[in-house]
Image (cartoon, rainbow, N blue to C red):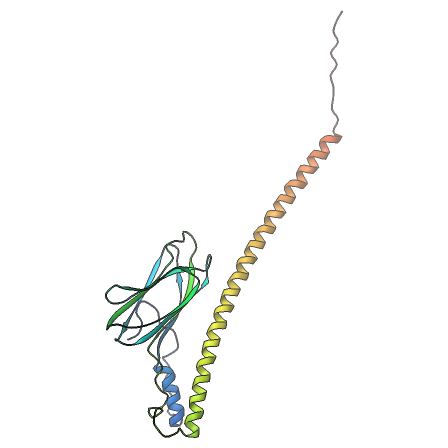
Length: 227
C-alpha cells in the first residue's frame, strides 16, 4: 500500500514501449520498481505538525531516514508509533537521523514531524521511508548453481545503480542545504550593508552640521548701564 498523507512524485503516466528488453534486463527494471520506498520532501510551516501513515506487515524490516534541508536551526521533532500507539522512536530538535525497526504486528504505523516549537520559521524536511528489503533480482538467485555471466552482470549493475541513487540523493540534499545557507548569509550581508550605509549617512550629516556650527558667526549684544 502506498504511503498516505503525502503526494506521490514521478512521471509514472507514460506507456511502456512495445519492444521489451531481454529477460535479464526486464527483471532488472522490474526489481527497481518493486521496492516499497517513499522518498518525499515537504514544507513544514511554523507551529505545524505533519503525520504520515503506512500499512506494514508483521516481521517487516523498515528504515526511516530524515533530514532538515532549510529553515531556522535546521532541526525538527520526529515521532514514530506502532498501531497500538506505542512510541518506537522519539527525538527532539534533530537535524538528521536514521532509525531501523522490525514491525512487531500488522497494522498502520504513524510517524510525525513537528515544528510546533518554532514561532515564525518554517522548515523544509526530506525523509526516506523504506519498507522491507529489496527482492532478489532473479527468482533463482539463491539457487545452488552459479549464476550465468549475464545474470552476474545484471546483479552488479543493479547494486551499482542503487549506490549511484544513494549518492545522488545525498549530494542533492547537501547542495540544497548549502544553497539555503548561502542565500541566508547573502540576505544578512545585504541587511548589514544597508544598515552600515544608513549609519554612515547619519554620521556624515552630523559631522557637516557640527563643523558648520564651528564657523557660524555668533552675534553678541551689549547692554549699557546708565550712571
